[in-house]
Image (cartoon, rainbow, N blue to C red; front, side, top):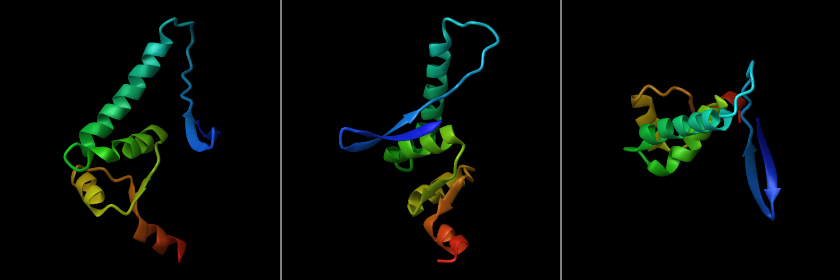
Length: 99
């Protein structure tokens, strides 16, 4: 779950990841940390030669199983070349919305 909150006067986000266990697990925090590291590592590796600053946005899309909306032609073409298909261009959204 992703919640948008206000921290002081700045917007922020809190992400909750739930893991169902059939038994108590004293090390669940390490498993959840591993999930987060794997997602971030995947994003960093995908954008390393495109634009490393975009890793945080790609990691969010991966974690949320969401489409990444971008007008960044270099990012879109670079990720498409790597087989990443969960990207929507701004122009595509405008066309679909009929704006």
